Image 1 (cartoon, each protein chain N blue to C red):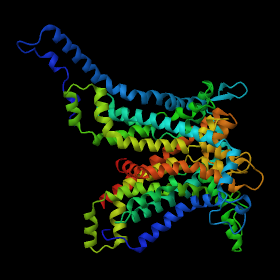
Image 2: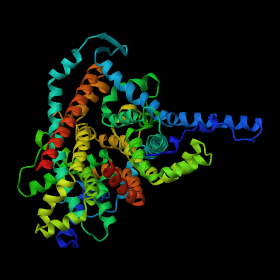
Image 3: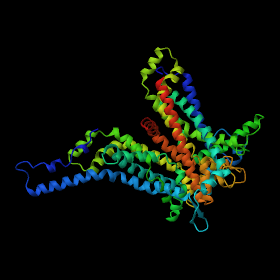
Image 4: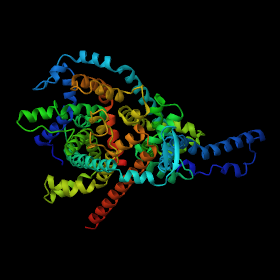
Length: 274
Length: 335
């Protein structure tokens, strides 16, 4: 494994990457043709010139901008909340001594295995009782904290903050919360960015819970769902559907280009320590 | 591990003040400060973890217990109220419901079709990435690309591949003179199509996790193996695989938990009006069953019972996975 990889390695990797990118390319290609072109054989393999026209049809069919704004609001809010509470709790679990620490941490880890659909029905009842159905608050509520977030921050902070630093902060008469802000938070920043990215993506791509919690209000995924359902019974208008899919995917693609490196590091870090 | 908190914070208070100490007023203030700091020390950890536990209790624990509770009651659908206590009747209903049984088989079939190839290919891709590549970050990011596509979007994209009439694959098949595949009708092929979408999105992600483990393998082990005359392939099976076993277990367990909960793909793959996993529930998964029973039909008790059963199954499989790997690891350790 020390030699430089040869042609075979690059060839196989390229094949895998092309396979991964192909469906995405295909959706953009087909989404830029007219309905007739998209349904013809042989199918158009190169992008056409009708994307803007399709995009306009998408905007006429669904409330795209509202859905985009809703997704953005909910994802950002949840990500900020998860990052804040996880950093606080993760810091306490990693660096502070208190009675019940081990047991409570084990509890946090255990809850990571609880499947989300277990809470589907009771959460739905809960939201209805508090008249929150069809609001963005209902979408956000179940993701204000995550056990994964606490676990992730704890794992990171155990090594990232030297005990000596905390000790000297205390010697200087720093209160606990000031120590947290001035020592722990700056050290945790890279992990916080990664957790933000993860939570943002998780909420953005979720389909099941918004489907349950919302009726008229839409997130992007729900809007896409409605888009696919229009014209049901006839042959699906793939030009329209895939143009919408592309429009809904672009924001995350931009995020990926800007922060993909961090995402990769985060996945690899979480794995080694997990 | 010695932290600042190990220092007895109260010491200064109990020891006698040095001769010619500060005047009384200053001493009192010092005492107050020290007392406050001691409370700060004791309470802060709980203060920091409490938001998590309070919120989790409301949106995690309470629903969990409520699911268990609901599963023992009938539900009055007209009055939106709890009905009679009916013991295990909901569980009996769900367990004997042919649709639930079918959904369980579907869930397992889709899960196996997705996680097995996914993990095998992920390990292979990780091995390719674990070489001295040029443009490392580029390759890693490329492999992760599908991960940013939402499952709902992925189903729509793949829907255009797998459409029964006009889909790309069937067009190619008929052009080659072959029979088109009825992706939305044939049970196996529908599972195959759904598993394909899942694999597309998650293989690269898993490859990165496995890659991280591979990079932690000490390089001199490979040198030693090479000195013993082991080729690349032999090195992979004799050195890499055994060393990364814990990570493989981790990947297997997370993909088990995820795979048994699959919902978006079968829901959106169905283009019939009721969308209950195909006209004959050929690809209805257990989570979809819970959704249909609980949210659409409002049989809360039955849906809760189904959710609880699925939870028990997931726990059982995770434990089984764990046990099997423990066994395998111990055997390898003895050998």
